[in-house]
Amino acid sequence: MSEKMLFERFRDKVVLVTGAGSGIGRGIALRFAAEGAQTLVVDINKGSAESVAKEIKSTGGRVTSLRADATNISHARHTITSALKKFSKIDVLVNNVGYCPVAPLMVTREEDWYSLMDVNAKTTFLWSTIVARGMIKRRSGCIVNIASDCGKVGDPYSGVYVAAKHAVIGLTKNLAHELAPYGIRVNSVCPGWIETPLLEKVNRETAALTHRSKRAIEREIVAKIPLGRIGTPEDVAGLVTFLASDDAGYMTGQAINITGGALML
Ligand SMILES: NC(=O)c1ccc[n+]([C@@H]2O[C@H](COP(=O)([O-])OP(=O)(O)OC[C@H]3O[C@@H](n4cnc5c(N)ncnc54)[C@H](O)[C@@H]3O)[C@@H](O)[C@H]2O)c1
Image 1 (cartoon, rainbow, N blue to C red):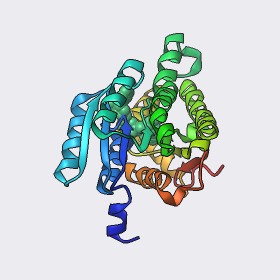
Image 2 (cartoon, helix red, strand yellow; image 1 turned 90 degrees about the vertical axis):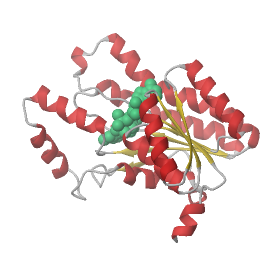
Image 3 (cartoon, helix red, strand yellow; image 1 turned 180 degrees about the vertical axis):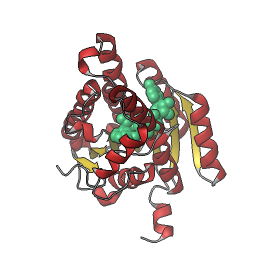
Image 4 (cartoon, helix red, strand yellow; image 1 turned 45 degrees about the vertical axis):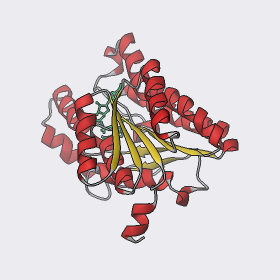
């Protein structure tokens, strides 16, 4: 694909990315903006959202930053309403917000269950159902949910996260069924280990919990990846933009791995 074609792929599109102030969400927002989209960078951290917006503006991209707690229904409604007032539509929603503490299930408290389900799964339900109302009226749109390889297999010390990411894949399938009659496609992506502040934190906490060095943990991770390296937010952004593009026009309800081959199911 030529540079010009790539740039024009999302020229008339409005794209909203939650949790876009850091890591994978930031990478996704930068990529959509580079391909011409009007990009809405949503994050609970106002400073991070503004800094990503500044980065996008400095390269000539079109962007608006919005502060919102994605777990809060009033914030979701308010953010989506202001976006619709300003741009009249949202073509692509990327539900990227997520968080993973390192804790064995046996020491996980009930309140941790609720907060992790909220941030990792409820956000997908809330933002998808609110944004889809406008998409249904226009009979077009696309939703991409950032799940995880943990949405398909178990992983020690992240039990609630694993349950929540399985829920994201389940929600993706149901939304795909319910929204297909309106021409709306819904897919999820399942990243493996991706270099972000979240992975840094998870590796640090795993090292402390298992009495190993963070270096040793990182070496073990790379040894499990057939392509021999940890992924980047740019790797994930390439898959997300593909799923949001017309090239994926016959794909819905899928959960696509992006793991360097670490997960092959
Ligand atoms: N990094 C990985 O290895 C990896 C692997 C698989 C899946 N994922 C998933 O990718 C997504 C992004 O992860 P990341 O590694 O980029 O994390 P990250 O911590 O680097 O970025 C997450 C962003 O979400 C924001 N955020 C957190 N809670 C929020 C809320 N309630 N409302 C709005 N914004 C909120 C944070 O401020 C931050 O900017 C998550 O869903 C995560 O589960 C990450």
